[in-house]
Length: 627
Image (cartoon, rainbow, N blue to C red; front, side, top):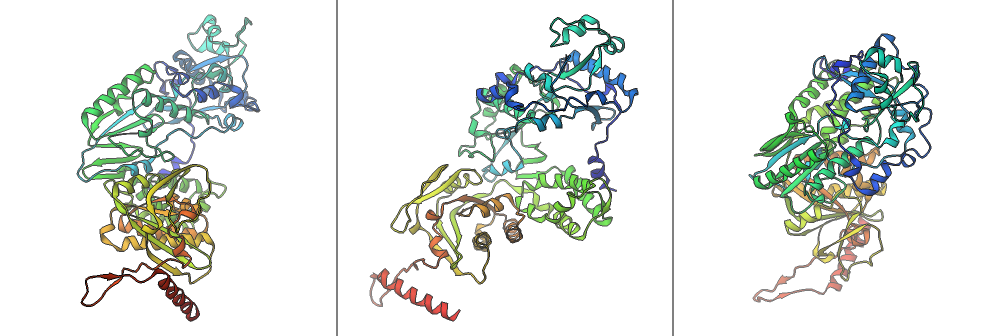
């Protein structure tokens, strides 16, 4: 019955309203994001015309028809009174938009969480920006840790975060919830008419009677609104910046990883994780961060605060420094493993329940992105409707769940993998085949190059030489490395045995490069830099999967090799005209001739390149005819 946990978690089971069972802060709306975050973004979120260019639609029309059970209404009114008292809610006579509310259970027994269903308001709003420098488990792989190096982990967690983020008053009328009568507030609470009148924002001298209907509106950024997450993330990042933390030290997959990693931060909305190499430096930073959070009106959850420990739990993962490992939290992995076993033994589940299990598995796959390639049929299954009906789980879905279960131990990743002092470039050409070349490169420089991986807009240029093609103008940011095409040696220049889509050929070339690296045991347990000029293949390999069958198979092969050899491939884009493997992929590479030593002589003689090239072309023509 272990999979029943995911079935229950997938259901939105509303609990009866109990006003006193809902946790609220002593004082809400204590943090003003407009005073913290970047000016342009602050102007956008303070302007209703920017957030709601076409209004809030008809989201307010259904608020009066909310309560399914009139017996719950007194408890709803009492809860509104508690939220009005702490400053989370205000009152309005007219509103532009809103959503219904309900309560769900919390992990603590007999405690409830109030949920504001703001889907219709979010649908009417403009599309929010992506949360700035948002961390996830993949961010841990950006750490460069030496073996046996000391690390100090710390954590800060803002208490009742979305209930302390003050919303601009101009937006309150969009965050309404079901109305109450003034008489209900007077009868069921200790409020007076003056108290109610003082809380009505748009009273404008109008008379209020006990029969008057008023709308409770959120004075904070509600959790159910699409823009709230990016506002919360921007506020947490702003606190870090005000504490003196360098912006480029806040890890994010969209931004370049710093070379100096004496201090690093990971921010995920209300969670801030810090990593330090020196205890004194960590103590100084934490003192400033605590002071800035207090000044900004962000109360901390002291029960979750951690100071300079050798291991920590954050973002659903456990980090340790000796050994330097990142592993999913054991309780969650145990829950996922038992649920998967239960499903395999009794393959009856709802698409929604399987989706809940898949969501947890995908979060941990961010540590080992190749494991995303396992799932294909599962995605089709979870999209079935009706989603809540129990059905037989198809065999292919069971197979994917079994493979994921067997590979769960591979989700533990080492943080002390060193950079390989080598760069590999791969390419494929439809008129010939595959090319793989490599060049020695200092590990420190390879690390700088590898940190550009997965960063949108960054690409690599080689030093120009006589073999180079003219550079084409490109947008984004070039990085010129101290290597030319002549510095690369050919490992593979092989004609393709079959015809295929160009992306499939490019993926197979990358696979050949990975196999070459994995054959050498000395290159295992390393971070390896690959240069590739096919963005579709680069994106699929970085993401770990592809919906295209040809690329999906290649992603699975890449995952198998990288996990078996404990490799962390770092793929960096290189334009085709700068790709050193381009000539090898077209069968035009020059064979590197090192010369021969004549008998009785110490002098090395080198044959002319032009003669050698003619011999190579002749051999190539003979090989083509034999083929």
